[in-house]
Image 1 (spheres, rainbow, N blue to C red):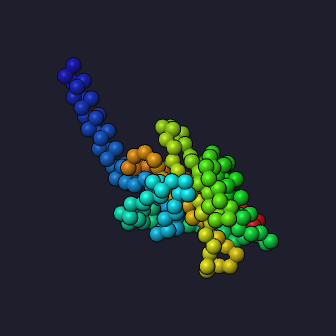
Image 2: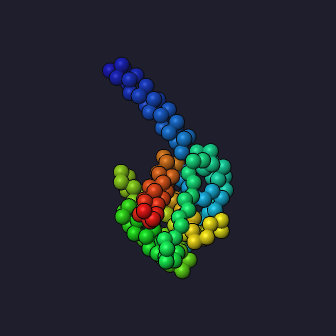
Image 3: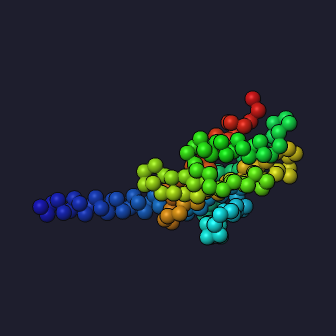
Length: 171
């Protein structure tokens, strides 16, 4: 019986060490692109609050996460790209909770598969001053629960951006 206690204790120590390593790799729960541009959540002042310490952590942990820019298709206006962005969000299972086509901004919720946590996302299409007729895809994804998201928000931003680029870019 004593051997069983020792085995359980060792397993608990190993599990705690693994959890600590995992959490230290993803120590924040609020990710955004482009870096330094924090998008406000239209429906909640509380959600919009951003910890400025996260910016340096995001650059260190997710330095490869960059905003994409899309050139409008011939004859299209920003609202066409906006509608496509919303369709992509819905195809990923997001629920649109607020939409402002004039501001080219929408807010959505996404529920995690395993734990059923609801996370909040805001997408904003930003006119690209460097390239005419193009928009930067601004996205912020924030977990409502916990300090660490285990990389879920960065992965969500990547999935959305990749899907929108594939759906909209001219052939």
